[in-house]
Amino acid sequence: MRIGRAPAGWAALLTLVSCLPASAQSPAPIQGVTTTVSDLTLADTVTQLVRPVGATHVGEALGLATELQVATMPFVASSSGFVIKLDPSTGLQVRTATTFGPSFAERALTSGEGHVSLGVSFLSATYDRLGSDKFDGLQLRSLTAVSPNDGRSGIANVTVTSKTVLITARMGVTDKLDIGGTVPVVTVKVNGTTSLLNGNGQMILFAKGGGQASGLGDIAGVVKYRFYAFGTGQPDPGGLAVMATMRLPTGDRENLRGLGVTRTMLSFIASGGQGRFRPHANAGYEWWSKGVSVTSDYAPNSTVTARHQLQFAAGFELEAAPKVTLLADLLGGQIFGGGKVGFRPDAVPSAGITSSNSAVALPEGIRTLSLAPGLKVNLKGKMLLAVNALVALHDSGLHSRVTPVAGIEMVF
Image (cartoon, rainbow, N blue to C red; front, side, top):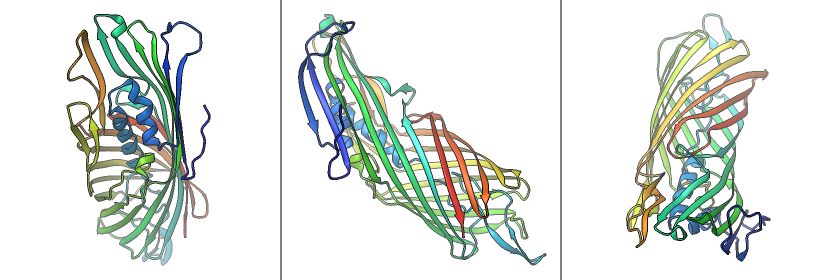
């Protein structure tokens, strides 16, 4: 299958084949009538790809799961890696912390008045799990009948990937107040096949399709204010801060790059330590201007709506060497109301059907827990290299088991 390019910057192609019955063991090519649908958004591509082999609205459920994962992927931390201040006891300009700061969580330390940091990070994710199930080879429908010819099994072999470039900027307005922003540039790619088999293993329908979309994700603006210090002097003893993050609906939901709602998160930050070991902890609640809804096949005429989320993080920085900081964060969260896809009995099985189950959108939120190990290295001057990984320990939605992250930061 060849993917073309549409003027809007995305491309999709879907081929549906209504097959003549053929043995599943036969090496003969699939025969039947081929229908090609082009110029679809990625959301439409997923819907058209899975609808013939699953419940009517399962494509919307999978699309929502993808949007939530792409749009709520953790951003890199707003804290500057280098913070230089005057030490009153010596009259010298010194680093306020010997560590370079966390990668995903936040520390209370601010950038310092007049200091600016710029960074570019890259994340690459392959969403290969849906809850505890493999996304490749996922069963979307299971129907058993008195006659095997009336049985049905719908299987999806779909790969969804995202590549995100994060461009960040932070500036210290005062010694206690930082402002900044993050611009994500996201490429989402969908590719796969679906097939519908009867109870004898004979193929009834086969679909193949895919597409790719690139553009802005949901842009974020950040304000952080440190309101309390645990002490005075250098190195910085840590303290308490609050941070407000607003995510704007700049990502295209139809191409799975955003949620189409304004999101505002208020976070509380605590960090401390004067030596080589510096712990930190965060907790925040994100309010969404409206819910993100899809139609569910779980109950007649029902709608599933995801809205608002809770996030938390805890971890530490360890000065392994003067130019190397080792990092570890535990990141968790809860999206409320929707986003989970599960296998449930169909409401009204037809005559002659002994059981029927389908993957559907559930009125349940998504819980996540990830480990984020990594390190930051001072390459030269005030340039930092950060290398990390997001390792999913638990995720009830569509997710990547391991997401590598790398970035460069400069402080001016």
